Length: 178
Image (cartoon, rainbow, N blue to C red; front, side, top):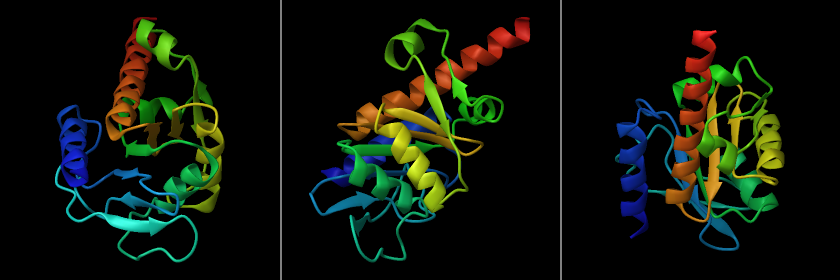
């Protein structure tokens, strides 16, 4: 069941401290004309009823405030799932770099470059920049805001989220030794 998958991935995000409180959101593109997204203000480990958002047209008011980003990504790419989280090391690293070059082996292998998108949370500017980044890859970080990771499933998007935080944590640790 779709609801169970959202809850399972939300619990993983919480257990790894990739989100806190009611921050972050997730969605899946389950039809040609719409996608399911978490509600505004919901906790990802217990997201409650999901909201169906059309790819074009009016958006239900209870949809996550980042619906613009999710919609733009689904309109411009073939991605099927999005996880938006606020991993602290990824957020911090995005404040000092325009692009992040992982130095750990997994980061080098799965995302050799992580682009940093710009724009205020929930804005059209952020939606356009994130969609442009994700047209070429599965992961980007919104400056000072958090990761947007994609995949064929929420599980795959979660893995990219975790990978970004690990890569940024390693970069932080290495820089503290210098």
